[in-house]
Length: 172
Image (cartoon, rainbow, N blue to C red; front, side):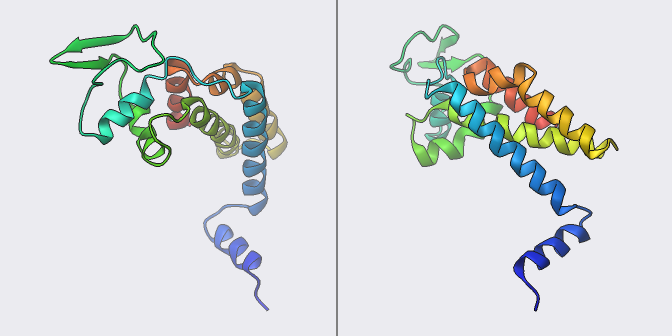
């Protein structure tokens, strides 16, 4: 009979996706997630401007009511009774569902690690899409994930680094 795995393989093949390539992408993402998490060592992101901004969005505001309790936020602009984050808001927009589910105390670094790991898988797909051999695409993805600033930025998760990680996600 027809197995679920067989149907899934045919569904992928109909869309021009080799199931082996998908497995490699998933494996790369899992390994990157684990390595980035280990390097981070449960160190919360400092200056996580985007979590409080995402929370403000969830409450219908474009700015913060007050400086977050962790303090040290030196890139907020006060106007009209609110504190505005000086950075473009896309990272906060991406964080909205995470903050909605996990609350305003969630760690921005965790999401940064998640997207950093996704980027390693995306680098694999981009390399394949450029026509490189699988072995070359694999090496390029590994070098991208573990031999570039991607590793540090993903696990740090601060405002600047998280924005960098998301920029790479959208570029890839």
